[in-house]
Image (spheres, helix red, strand yellow):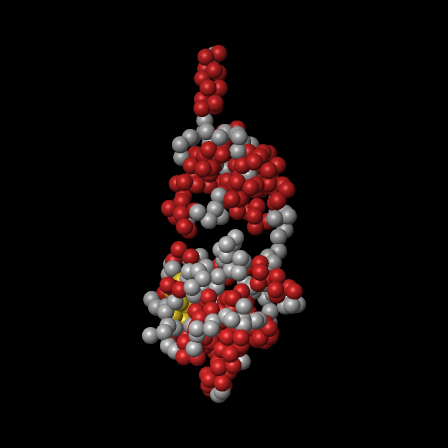
Length: 344
C-alpha cells in the first residue's frame, strides 16, 4: 500500500507542468499558424492570463475552481481576450490527454459554465460616414506618414500591409501582397487606381533610397515602420471620429449605399472571405478587372478628382510642386519627367 502511494507521488512529480505542456502544444501547432507562430498571437493569451497562475501545476491537479479563479478577473471585463485564452487552454488540455488518459478534457467546458454568460455586446470599430472620407484625405499632408495614410485609404487593405509594404511588391497597376503578410495566408492582388499610383511615384522620388519600405517611418531606426497608432492619434487630434482600420468599413458602406457592386465583390476588395450564393464562382477568379473599376470609383470619391479633372493643368501643378520641393531641398536632382514618366 505504502509503495503504491509512493509510486503515485513519483509519477506526479515526473508529469510535466501546464507550462511545459503548453509549450509542447504550441510547437506542435506552429506549422498551421501564420508565420509559424512567430507573431506570438496564439501563445500570448496563455502566457499573459493563464500560465502565471496555473503554469506550475500538472494538468491532473488543475480543477474547475482553479480555472474559474484564473478567469474571473477578465471573463466579463475582457470577453474577447478571455475567450481566446480559454480556447487555448482547452487545446493544451486536449493535447495533454492524447498522452495521458487521466486528463479530464471537460475542465474548460465546465469552467465556462460556472463562469456564466459574459454579457458582452460586440463593439464595432469606429468608422466615418463615407461622405466624410474626402475631408480626411484633403486634410493630410505630403509627409511620408501622411502619404502612407492616403495610400491606405485609397486601397483599403489592412493597415499593416501598407506600413510593411516594400517596392518589390509593386507592379505598374497592381500591388501583390505576399501570403505570409495576409490574414488568410494567401497572396492577394490589390488593383491600384491612378491616384494610388501617383502617390507611389511621389514617394519613389523622395524616399526610395532610404529603406526597403515604401513608407518608411521617420523614426525607422527605433520602430522600423509607421505605427497604426500614429494615424489613430492624428485622426483623434483632428476630430475625425474613426480609427485607421475604420476606413475599411467606410469603403464597404460606400459600396453598399451607392450600389457600386454586390456584397461579395465588395468583400473581395477588402480581402474578406465571401459567403454569398456566388462564393464558388468568385473563388475561381480574383476578379481583378472588376475590382480595379470599383477601386477607381472609390479613389475618385475620396480625392474628388476624375482623370479629366486631373489632366487639366497637370504639368503646371506638377512643375509648381517640383519647384517647392527644390526650394525645400528635398529632391534637387529630380526633373518633371521623373515625376510623370511611366515605370516601364
